[in-house]
Image (tube, rainbow, N blue to C red; front, side):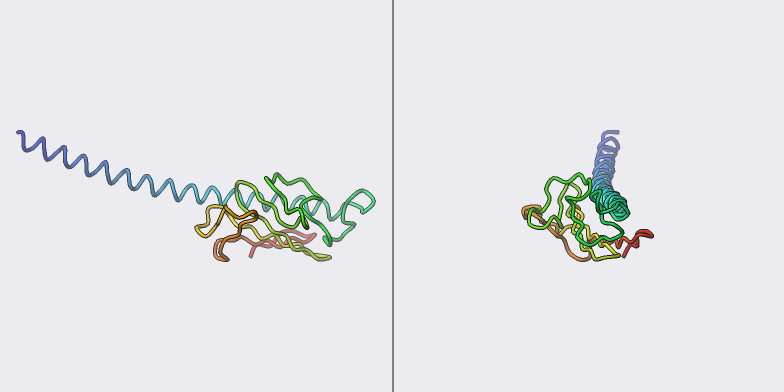
Length: 145
């Protein structure tokens, strides 16, 4: 009877250990997925604000049917910091966002904080090309790349 109880205790310990490792892995994957979802939502918010700025007349502080010259300072985006030199980069807890624009298109490149190459010690960190999300915004909508 004593050996059976000892074997059961060892078996339960092994099962609990395996379950703990699996739970830690699932939690890590879920956190990265949640961060990617938050970055996508941020990019969609940026795209929506950019389209609003695009159609607003210049005399009201908008683009007058042009994305040219638009920066993060021109619309509402909840950023921890915005690049002071040009306003084309912004950082929040989800990641870093960089915009490039011309007359009819606007590109947002997002670098999620969950990317393993993301270096948060930089003022405006970036990640590897494999971890970034790129969206091109036009007056007609958003195209993901």
